[in-house]
Image 1 (tube, rainbow, N blue to C red):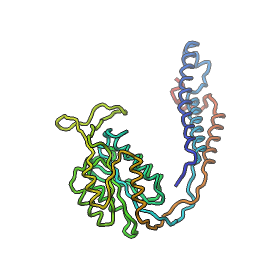
Image 2: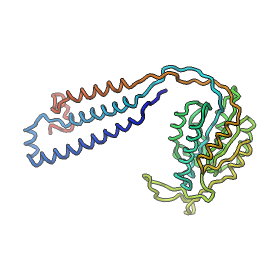
Image 3: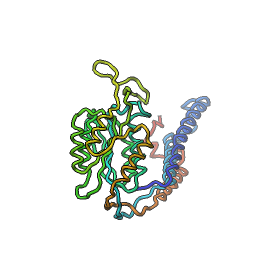
Image 4: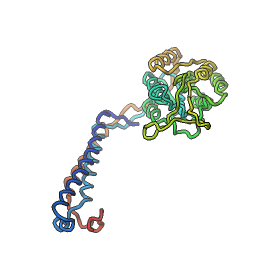
Length: 345
């Protein structure tokens, strides 16, 4: 387990492309200036030991020095002491729809990004509850098992996209069945499944499976993202819309928020349906629901002590800078033999 103290210092990495750009511009200027001064054969006689490879190597070392300086300023810390603590909370599994219909932009910026925002804000308002994440489309895929590591949960969440599952569709029943395996039968915690979707379910089993999950003590809450009026599904290249998804007849597909499906699922599992248009309303509704639930005590392992690691990166900074200082632009015998960049031609 690691922590990053001062993430703002990652901006130092922006100096590296500036250094590389400056080097390329300088090389182009030197080439043009030398070309005006003398021809290639004469220049080789005037400076036979000039090494392009060493110039590139020096820029590489300088870039590495700035990269290590950035990491030293960020100060990564590694957990060194793991201890078991008692916590009280609820086990919550988030099932996020990643089907292609979630790319529709009838809710800004699009349905999937809105879903990520909702889950992130809900997690930010949790205290000691355990959480897990599932991605689903035509199939369901486990993203993160039940954990108290909220930072990892948000990292996995941000990496979710519509290309992570090859089978398309919106099989909510698959997500519910997978969620049923997430909870530990030996720990009698309150169990919550929160499904975030546009409700375009292509199976008819979701309500039946939801009832079975309720029999196992799982309450299901559904959050609908999208607009009931619907919208097309954009197909983009390099972030630019080039067309919209079409059906076999060549007509543009319009995908709509199906609130009825989501309402039926929540009803069968003693939950509630929440429209996801307003993030604050969703977060407040989930908070109230969780606050009214009994909290169960459970054991969780967490790192209690972290050790600074900045000194390693600072050492590399000094090493690369010293190496850069003592590395001359002149060729050495072994470089001449290697003939890197065809410098002897």
